[in-house]
Image 1 (cartoon, rainbow, N blue to C red):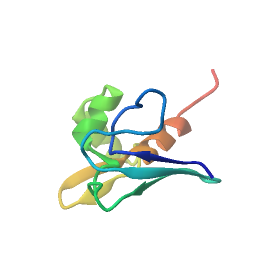
Image 2 (cartoon, rainbow, N blue to C red):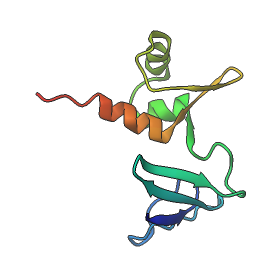
Image 3 (spheres, rainbow, N blue to C red):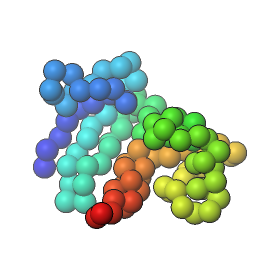
Length: 103
């Protein structure tokens, strides 16, 4: 099982699995089910999540489009905290993979 220490949502640093963007560190583990994110106590609770606006910007769509997908049950799984919607990065990747089609 391969492990790497990363920090929040940073980017690769010189080809290593270490990230440091001031958000604390976390561990990514490769398991038979795929990569899992194991936050350390200093990692913000929502480090693995994106807001609806962040998700929309990430995929180049409007917030309104993402909200429509959510209401129709067509988008990725959503985590609601109060009135706010959050998307787990791993879930959005899995959802995008599920959209792949042979042409």
